[in-house]
Length: 160
Image (cartoon, rainbow, N blue to C red; front, side, top):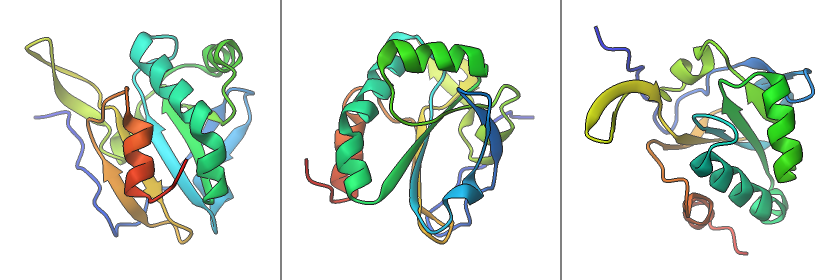
């Protein structure tokens, strides 16, 4: 049996969630009903690719928020680790803890992938855009850490 979760598609209802943030507070997708939300999944805080991606979101947060988008980052890391990551990198959006990968799996962001020529099971770097009504409007799997936010802004027609 494969550990790869089923992928979400545009037009589906976004799976609901409640996770602890870097300040050890509950954050739910339903908190953002009526707003557009970018939910991105990354393998681990304080790693080179994940730091690049997080800082890219940080550096583009004004244009994203200006276009009406909230950003939420999700990883397996504990709230303590997320707090250190957010502080070290000056991150200006919530980071959410999914230690058992339940939300990763619900979004199809956990499963088999190729890593250095080997098939492994782990986090699939993925980004989802959820519209004001809680529906998936973008489902982007296996994104690259570098240049991803610029690509996302282009898809969302957001200028710098």
